[in-house]
Amino acid sequence: AQSVAQPEDQVNVAEGNPLTVKCTYSVSGNPYLFWYVQYPNRGLQFLLKYITGDNLVKGSYGFEAEFNKSQTSFHLKKPSALVSDSALYFCAVRDDTGGFKTIFGAGTRLFVKA
Amino acid sequence: NAGVTQTPKFRVLKTGQSMTLLCAQDMNHEYMYWYRQDPGMGLRLIHYSVGEGTTAKGEVPDGYNVSRLKKQNFLLGLESAAPSQTSVYFCASSYHSDRPTQYFGPGTRLTVL
Image 1 (cartoon, rainbow over the protein chains, first blue to last red):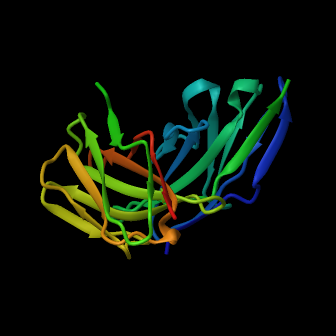
Image 2: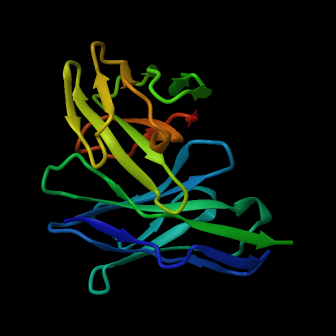
């Protein structure tokens, strides 16, 4: 069965410092992996995805994520955090065996201090 | 394009009342989904549809029904609301299985007293 774990409920980082939001997954086939961001009182917005190809994926707003098959991880990163990056981040996974269900992690709240 | 829209934005119900949440998308997406979001639990899939006239159960379907009579609309119904259904409900859509990125609506905050 598919599952996603985001081990940190909250991540605190100072503006200008690099940030990492962690995600590990479990799927039966090859994974489709996603990161979404949710700002207060808004729906989720797509940030980036990995389906195949280069393990380092670049997405919106300067975010990137690295797919690591051996560690079954897909950590979200940004070299220099902004206060405006403060939001709730969700990792999601879907396997490529034709299923229609995408499983979302519980979310990690990112706080960037000025 | 408006993208994915949801009505209403807020609603308060009494236990036992019924209501329908409407989701509409103007991107010609085949797939549509209803999720609920509860604190610390992420998003859980209630029901989904892979095309007009088709629906299927997700993770937490009990107490909900859905219909997809038109490709652009996906309705979520609560026949007899319970306090456990207090949540924020999100609708999403995607093109098809080979283009799985989902586009979300702004959400409906439902309180059941």
